[in-house]
Image: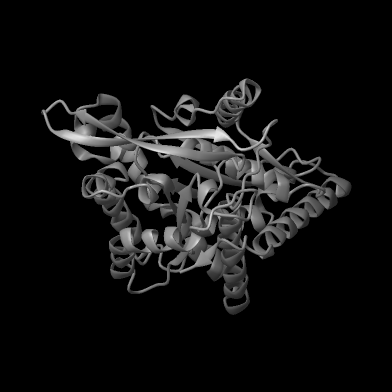
Length: 384
């Protein structure tokens, strides 16, 4: 199995993780417009994204928007995407983004689901090996809670305890000697922010309040991450996303529900409408995810090149092989950005032209990574 650069999403059910992936890929394609680099998806990822886009297209054609109807993942989902130079048959630079049902975060729920119990060790392994931990937040749940009962419900609806537990595991793994010199980034991404901003066709003036609430409610998680990563730096990004860019939250309804144990809880249901007809999807700030992943890869490449300059090649290769055996970040950097993937493929091809073309593709990919990483962040996005 060839290595990839991993990211993981950690959030409760119905927060909009699947739609966020679709938005991330849409903005990445926009970033790559006019370049020699294409965004490629494996078959399963393409099917999932296509299904989500079709559901949204149906809503646009019907001119009725129901966020709940767009569905979500009921099983583990691994989105395999990559950047590939035009005309290249190799996978390019691959990224693997993990999603799974939010209910799996709850150990009690997980223990009662055979599929969750079977798959959870693989989920945890992917999370602890991820360069990025992506925490999606349903912005409306934070912003529309006004009564004491509603504010109490926020903790359960956004899964603070479970998210913090996974953030602790991730940060602790990033702090291990095997990973300490690898890049690491935590992205907190409020979703469906259209109502609260005025920079994407809306009239909202609540960006400052949303930022304040996210800082307040996720302070414990940030404290945990800092405590667990005392020997390294973790980059923290705040990226409020317009997942659709063409809808407005008209009403937030709090519904009382009774659980299996008889406990009464509040659930939140947002009612949205298209803000213009015909609607035009205008995703905003979702591309931050791929930008940050590209920064991780470029940072790793730069560091690897400095190592190469400081060490004899043979010594470096031996140390690199040992690292690659365990987790694979440095192995992935070397494999994809040093040309090893192409060298392995071209070793059987006695053609100077083919080798020259392969080197050109490698340079195009490295250039695309640097351009994406160097693209100015959306004005909404902040480094915390």
